[in-house]
Image (cartoon, rainbow, N blue to C red; front, top):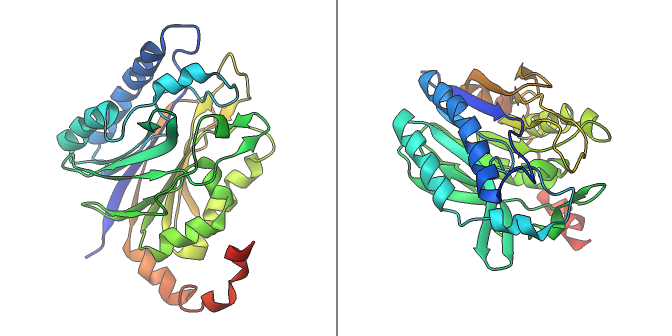
Length: 288
């Protein structure tokens, strides 16, 4: 029997920004803007829903304002508990990317994974942290220390890779070796230098590892940072590296797609990349 999955991605622009309220008010405005889309996803039968990178705040990393440390919270914590209610209501797995506070001064760019019954399954912490060209993330985030976990949800085995991670094939391969059937990449990326890579790297990861990917990018411009235009274009790509559903480049949107997980085995039986790997020859990868 085919293993058909219905999955959704939400790309969202910012309703309220720095200087337009307290940090808690800005966060709450972003959550409130998401809720109708989350409800729509549930009502349309989405089984796995992923939100964008640090979904409930602006992408504040073009600045270096320590006030945004206040937006971090524990994981699990208030936002994950709140999202778990919607997961439980709609029997919907949710990937919830937020700013995590493990301890004072110990902050991570994190995604919580919540199962369809509202159970918190665990989290992924962004491993690769950029610090260049307006993306001053090392000011805000420690590098992840949880490796590349894969979560057995009610519907599929899923992994998470966050934004800048996508430029590194090594972790993408680890997720495949760890058993991921779908990898979600919540992002915040602007038009310019890396835009052509958006439709290149993640299809390459999907093809090289024989899994599906759901790739999310926010939309709009965010003041006062004015880093550039977040161009949306969220999409799903299959194990052959073919993009089969894509959102617009300029508007808030819930992108929904249906796909068959049995295609993973079909593709891997043709392209035997895992069989033909030569890990004993890859020592240089960890020497340098």
